[in-house]
Each structure stands twice: as structure tokens, then as C-alpha cells.
Length: 172
Image 1: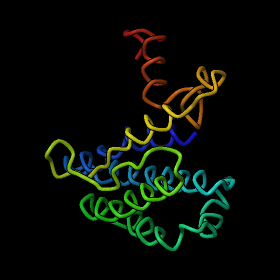
Image 2 (image 1 turned 30 degrees about the vertical axis):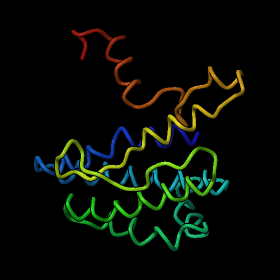
Image 3 (image 1 turned 180 degrees about the vertical axis):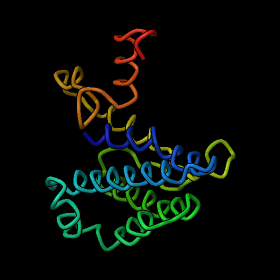
Image 4 (image 1 turned 45 degrees about the vertical axis):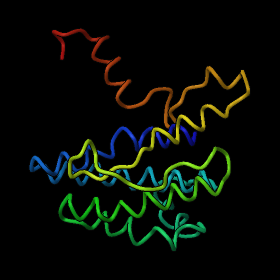
């Protein structure tokens, strides 16, 4: 589940800035909100706490040990009116969850710093490295066929591709 959470953030983190850069601030805000939710879910997993249904999600999050370190950044990201501010708020949140991961000692220490996305102005972190490192540590052969997404058997991108291939090109 941890590996799937890191993968989900990896797949979307660059899209928030890219959507805003082309003038789609609503799209950027939606992606940013999903990133906040995914960061919060990772925090629940890393602290081995149950993430309740949406009504109590934020309340329960505030009880996590990491909440004082990360809540203000997440709240500021949600309140941001531009993608530039939003990504500046998420930068320390990414670094905080990376430090949290490293303190678990479930993998070798991984890079905790953000970087630019292909030398562009979008701030990202190599979240895929976290997923890969976690998956490499799994030794149980029965875990190998398990789906890697924590919300369903398929990631959003894969599910969309499968749906489009199933309905055919003329039915889209």
C-alpha cells in the first residue's frame, strides 16, 4: 500500500504545475487537492493508523504525530490561488514525508530533496524511487501478484487506458 501511495503521487505531482502553467488553475487546484489527500494517506500508513472515511479524515489526520510538521503546508496548498504558490507549499510537505519514510528504516535511505521536473519550473520529488525501494524489499512470494494500487486493483491511468481499449475507438 505504501508503494502504491508513492506511485500515485509520482504520477500526478508534475501535472499540478503543468495544468496551472497553461492557465487551468481549476485543474491545477483539483490535482493539488488530490496530492494533499494522497500525502495525508501516506502519513496514515507510515504512522500505522487507520484513515477514516472523509467526514473524519482531516480530524483524524490532526491527531497524527506528523500533523504539526505538515498541516500548515497542506492547508496553505489547498488555499493557494495559483499553481506557483501551491507547489511552494507542497515542496516542504514532500520533503517531510520523505524524511518520515527514511525514519521507518524499511528501505535504504532515499533522497529527501525536491528538484525541478526536467529542468522546468515544476517542483517534484523522485517518488518512484520510494515505490521501487519498497517493492524490492518484499520477500513474500504470495505478495507478488497483489495489485499495487491502494484504492483499487488498477491505477487511475491504467484503468482509463483499459476502459478506452475495451470500448473501442468509435465509442469514445
